[in-house]
Amino acid sequence: MILDHQLAQQIVDRTMSIIGYNINVMNHAGIIIGSGESQRLGQVHDGAILALKHGDSIELTEESCRSLKGVKPGINMLLQSNEQVVGILGITGEPNDIREFANLVKMTAEMIIDQADLVEKLQWDRRHREEFITAWVNNELSVQELESWAGKLSIDIMQPRVAVVIQFRDQETPKSLQSIRKLVDLLEYPQRDNLVAIISMNEIVVLKPCQSVAQWDSQIESQRIDKLLARLGENQIDGFDIALGQLFESPWQIHRSYQSAKQVLQTGRAHQPKRNKHLFEELRLPVLLSPLADFWQGEQLMNAMDKLERKDKSGQLVKTLDALFKANGSVSECSKLLFVHRNTLRYRLDKISEITGISTSDFVGLTELYIARQISKVR
Image (cartoon, rainbow, N blue to C red):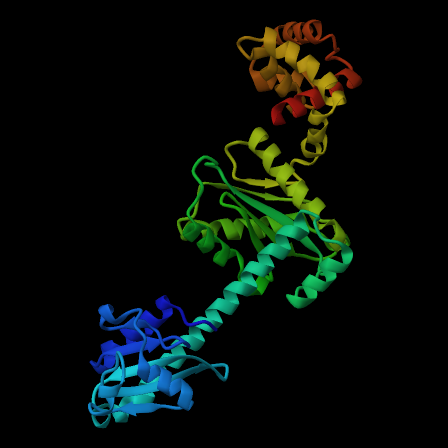
């Protein structure tokens, strides 16, 4: 534990408010780094040097101070943490007047140091856990590294987990670290054993423990997400999308669950922009098709939609095509959804076939148009 100026001044402020005497805190070199008299900061305190050399408390009277530099009457005591000297505490005043509560002040100061040390260790542990989770979901660790790091952090990598991605909608204005941490604290509740990492100032990943693939129930996970959304709302946290990926039972495939959650999020925003909860099971086919957009096969499929969108200035034909998909290809059901006559609908469908060169009246053609439409939405 290293005693810095901030912690030293905290000790000074908290103890002086109780006893009413000036307090100085010196580092292991005897330099004043915290004091009720700000002009003394940075000065060498000979009384602290004596206490360090003596290895014990030193009492200094008015007379003994005359031969020392930067010292006033008082008691100088060693501050320890984990059985190591980390600094010196000096109480200004005649020893006879302050001796009764000197040890109490020393004990209070050491409690403050131990508490700060514990907080620092917890923060260190959190940082390393986040670094591990980030490397894990990005598939940056070898098998040996994954097992070794998980062992040091007491993380059971054999516990099946599914990735959940939370992204704030306003990508241009990142959330403050304080608001991000507030969200992380709500996600890290011990009962669920969630592993949480801040990927960026706009994205958080949660690795949720779950049953095996054979017992996997996305509806149960969906209900848990609903409860989480309710808790976040109660804490005034909003303006985000949350996506549940697919479960891959092997710990070596957790990156695939993370990738699937990211793809679900992207697809969900394109297909259901008014919702903030997106599930792989609800968007399964569009999610599985979406990677085609990055390959020549996807480009070939999207040619039909590109032609249609260029000719369809009002968007009426694309809307008609979407309604036909929703009606599972049934012309009668589609006409009801659109509130148009069957002849009007048939004219629009023939127009779509004419523009795209793909038939809307057979299964193969309709399937090709459906795939093209799903890819174009994500694009």
